[in-house]
Length: 387
Image (cartoon, rainbow, N blue to C red):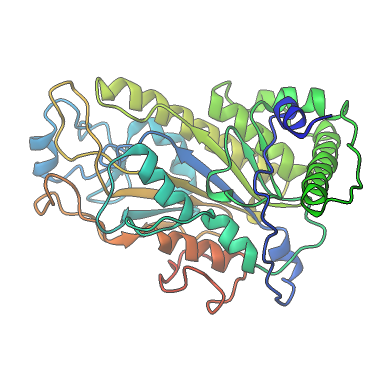
């Protein structure tokens, strides 16, 4: 079987042909070696102001006469901020102090292009810097090794994003098709005198073996997809729960939810998308708690940018800058982190960021037990939101 046919058939990506430069480090303790990061990408640029609502700020209602969430509809977090009502399913996590909200996340000299901005987020670069490895690939290169790990990361959807350059990453574009097809594949020839071709063959066979192991273990999972919403993100998180419940050794599971580029008629679109997100995350938490896995998980959301503060003439919002991001899990110390961006002090109509997005990555490094001296984002201090 040709490599390109194998990859196409499974929807898998082990895309980098460069040999990773694994760093030597002391092994993690058993609990940390079982820790999963679940990345949730909100594709298109989620509007942070209508996600975490400054319901006591008159500027908010002045600048958004049609789009502002009514004060009596907001799900209050404290005396100034609240969640969009479609995220009410997350309130049990907030009350249990397992939901952390980091405010004002962004970076200097923001780029408002979808393509370039998500590239900056995926690689952890400065706005004028171009890197060829994802931020997770960079962290995993210096993380203590787990020899039992089947794959460094599993992407449920297209592309590898923050796992760019990691040839131990799998991408399942269609999980059900993946399960049907993985068991039917046969390994390719394993030996050649050509060193470059040998590396390709070794990579292909490693992906093949990982795919078969993953499919076999997923078939034995006790998680029922019917316990999750039938939305796209619900189906992705059902597979995520299956992976974790089956104790498949991997470090990262990435999922995504599209539709947040709300230039027109934002209110209904964002309401629907946030509702899907909140219900799916609540179902994930319930499932993992029932199987005693919630403490092994940290969920992190991200989006390429927020939206402009003022609504546009089409009852939507245009590309903006800073926005809040969520962390949740059994080991997360819930609460509000960072400074609430001021609506009275804007930069060309956009929010000023107060938390560099790479501080989120240093928080993940700490979660995995990566020493500060080895952390490629070590100049950005992590956020103290882990128990």
